[in-house]
Length: 245
Image 1: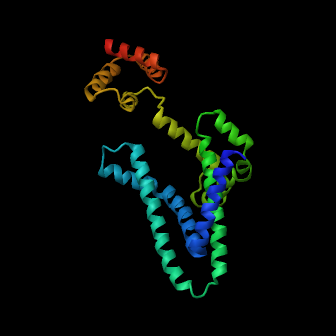
Image 2 (image 1 turned 120 degrees about the horizontal axis):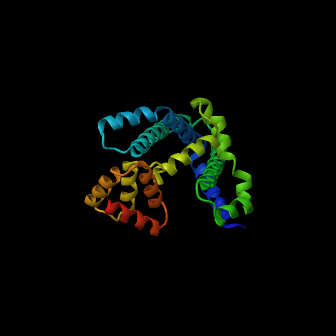
């Protein structure tokens, strides 16, 4: 058995046991809270992000977006948990114990395959390597559950937000991820981001490099910026050139 299948089996077992313990109502509301949280976060993330940027102008856009989405998502999750607790208290006396546990088991299994599918699809954002290819080719869990998250997104979430398919949204996210951590545009701000991410320069050194960078032609900017995104040797050459400007 492939090690990824073992991990998937452990996750399924864990979620099924949690579902049995939690019961149908708690499990159902938690799942509904996750789905509703995603929908509400997508619909209102931009508005909350703009409010955050107005209150904290120095916040990077990516941080503001992440905070906005997280706050909305967690708020909906907490609300769903409170509602579930209240309803479960009222319904406990009317719901058969075995039915409650069976429903919790099914919801737990569904949540497990969604998580497994999301993990597998998250791997598609990574550069191609032998581990990812081995999982996609050799694991039973990938063949069975790999498309669960896209199917759930397209049927449960996309109708409420009016955006593209799961694959299209994943591609957009991937592009944003790449731009955030490996920016392509040769702007002074992106230069600062690259230098700060390296952790090798003081604020004074970054300021000097930025000033020199701003004073060179655009073609030179693009050439040097490309070198800074390359190998260590290319980065050293680019920095040496900038210091000599």
